[in-house]
Length: 295
Image (cartoon, rainbow, N blue to C red; front, side):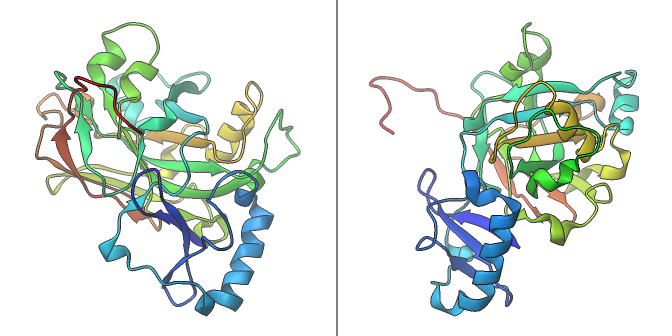
């Protein structure tokens, strides 16, 4: 099943694609794709109900509506660093002995076609196409006899955008370079595991202004998806709606000294095989001045 959320930012409606490829509004069944509704068994029940009752649900013309991130912001947003062999080789770094784990603000999430806002005064914003894993069940201290993939609600295309100066030159944690508004576009769909199959056989690409910058495959991961979930569960409880960004392949601007970082007007297109593509325009972010912003 393919899930998505449609509507203005902060007011998205839960939707799903039916067997005929029509997007259906599921608002009368549920409030949002969050919490227990992301449990794999619950999603299977929803899929069966959709097959029976799709015609009773409103159709949504996504060509005329905004598509938001496929899960609601608020869960833990986790970024895995240096998890592709090609990326490590490009950076001239040894493979990590254990996964490099960073956090991102969940409020950095954006829709796949929203503008990518470049931070005021910064010029080192970089692209990182990634496979995102959305957790569907509470995972805590998973043992070797557990199947970590049974805790997955689905997968989606992500761009783990990073501001390299804040990431590498300002000291402290990577979270500072990864948490700007719009720095985690997700979607358009959350695709359930039965449609994806093996998450270690997916092509990833990222283009900037039509030029292919990244072209890799999840088979190149140092630590595969299942082991990442097991590993993370040893020191943090993963909850439904948490999102794990599983690392990026070679081809980022940081590894291309002759390639500029993103600038206003650039078009960034990220795609993971079978999960859908982003297309985002880079624009300058506006500073907040005067009275406090209203929600």
